[in-house]
Length: 230
Image (cartoon, rainbow, N blue to C red; front, side, top):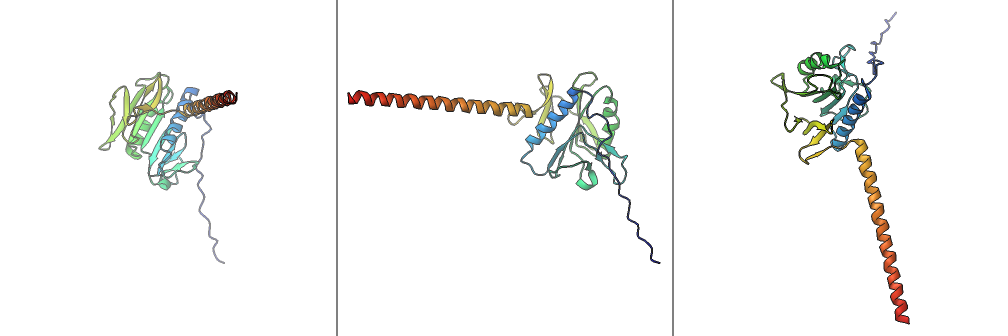
């Protein structure tokens, strides 16, 4: 009797651990704003993946080998919807990671995750920021140099990200992204919407003024015609 061929078991890679996505609303909003700002900034670049708060698996077949960066950017990786990020499938680890820290997480951020990002995943740049200023240091950045993370020095109260071509710094007390080529802060999605609404209102006002001017000119023309007839 021929032997039955058994199929290999399918490994399920969890998409969530059931825990809240962020410590506080402040942490959550910062994560969302950063992901949206970076997605918009790189919207016309095909091979860049911007994401965050997603399970990242770095050893095939081992669901314990995972981490969930708050914000990450991977260059050379196409845009698509993902449920998890599996490094062996994508072909590379992220180039940039931002962890939004809290008193509960900062020890892991500064030790366990830092070692993982530097030694195993080879993340080129790693930033840690505490939006509530409850830990010291509350804002620090590292860049991989000769296989070792070196602290990035501040310049104009900002930390430069060479891989992003942007700078991270506080604007009105909130961590934002600064574009040194344009000397301007990247707008959040809310700010872009507000600016678009303001442009629409401005265009509407200009159209109404133009229409009023046309009506005024037509009235003046009619008046001149009446005067000429008389």
